[in-house]
Amino acid sequence: MSDKPSPFSLALIAGGIAGTSVDVSLHPLDTLRTRIQAQEGFWKSGGFKGMYRGIFSAALGSAPGAAFFFSTYETMKKVIKSSAGDKEHWTQHSAASACGEVAACLVRVPTAVVTQNMQVGHYNSFSEAVTTTLKHSGVRGFYAGYGTTVFREIPFAFIQFPIYESFKKTWAGYQGAETTPVQGALCGSVAGAIAGGLTTPLDVAKTRIMLEKHSDVKKYTGTVTTLRTIAAEEGALALFKGIEPRVMWITIGGFIFFGAYEQATALLWRTKMWD
Image (cartoon, rainbow, N blue to C red; front, side):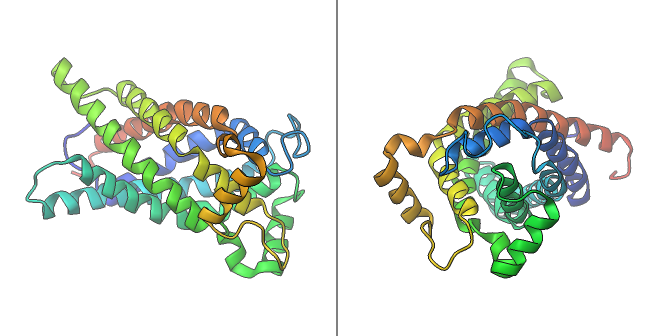
């Protein structure tokens, strides 16, 4: 892959390809995680039946969500590095990642609200999920859990991406050549597994907020309140429900995502459209 930073449009396309690859191939694992974290419990939320429920909405948002992330990440990384006098520091990658996540959540959260509610059987079709949410909550209903999702993604990014970039730099220095797409994918999956496990409580809170049924009285009203409610009613360990499929999804997904992104980036550079 080229040493040059990826232009906005190139990162947009590569990120979209990578995001779709992950979300479609690992959707059953995501369904498993959602059902384990649901208040109703795994079996009442569908058990092992219909593991591909909600895949359409997941696929619909994966490409633009990933594209928003990587294009913002690559752009902000250049801006932040330039403002620091072109000197590299791990905080630059973290800050760029956080910016990317905030942008991506504008697309990811609405599709996640639809996807997760379909995964646990609240709705039988994509159209029913969309129309019912609009009827009861308007457009705001599609952004239930937006704040919690951002609160989850920012620390995730501050943990994952510096590790990812550091692993790649160290590996490249050790072998005296740039990392291959496979090596980059390995770095991404390990970094993601570490970050995913540590941020599971925020993921559980996000899931509960998104899955709460439409009513005048809300049980889960914010990140901190939701975490406290879950811990008080179900015990502190409940905050780590679904950690196994979450870490597995991120580990495998990290390999697929970063590998697909780096491979797509390398192939797009070869077209010479961005020279």
